[in-house]
Amino acid sequence: MWTRKDMLGLNDLTKEEILQILTLANEMKPIIDNRALSTNSLKDTSIVSLFYENSTRTKMSFALASKYLGATFSDLGINTSSVAKGESLIDTGVTLDQMGTDIIIMRHGMTGAPHILAKNVKASVVSGGDGTNEHPTQGLLDLFTIMESKKNFEGLKVAIIGDIMHSRVARSNIFGLTKLGAKVVLSGPTTLVSKGLEVLGAEVNNNVKAAVKDADVVMGLRVQLERQKGGMFPDLREYAQLFGVDKKVLDLAKEDALLMHPGPVNRGVELTSEIIDGKQSAINIQVKNGVAVRMALLTLLAQARKI
Ligand code: CP
Image (cartoon, rainbow, N blue to C red; front, side):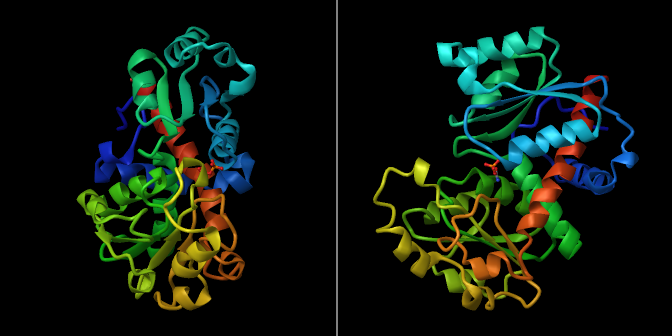
């Protein structure tokens, strides 16, 4: 039985809790293509999204997951809301609480912002990404995508390449993958992938080819230009040459290796178009699985609120 009020990060979850979400996501996935299978199980649930940073995948997949399960979904457009008049995060959350909101999905540039909101509202809070901390539902959909393809995690080698330092996706993946028994190798420039990251339970190898060799999964990460203060690497062309993954690098991984990326992709920087659109790419599958995982999570949180 699910008892947690909020979903703030995979670091908080047990292996069993992660597997519970993934198992339910597997049951939910057919609803995406056949809405007649939906039981409208969330028809009494109201969900609001509160995104202080831009999003296509996370916000829209929560919106559609809510609608596929019969919930009421509303987006508070930050730029046209009273946040633009200076209203605080907590006052905004309490206001949504008073309107009967059951679940708030939020993204914020500040690490820990969803944790602050969760302590101050009755609604369940789901992090859609906070600062450089975690992006738990991206981590869950990545785990689900790997599970669909590889069946189990024990002994898998997952190479995560790119801007790890600024990546909340990498942190959620590291927490989830290591709990489930996979080995994670991080790679990229030393300015963005330092040895200190090994404290998270992953290995660091700044040689991309060595990191990718014999991997079961190769995950590229977006170069987050908006979070960098400059000087992390000379320019994007040089980054692509030294740390980008192309067909030759991908061929060093296992023959059946999965290529993943959370999106949006800087085509030709972290991955070449040839492999983004190639047969090993799971990038579009990840997007679809995001809806299934979010349907599962919303269902469990709504159930927990009735206990
Ligand atoms: N992967 C991801 O979080 O994408 P969006 O920023 O489009 O939500």
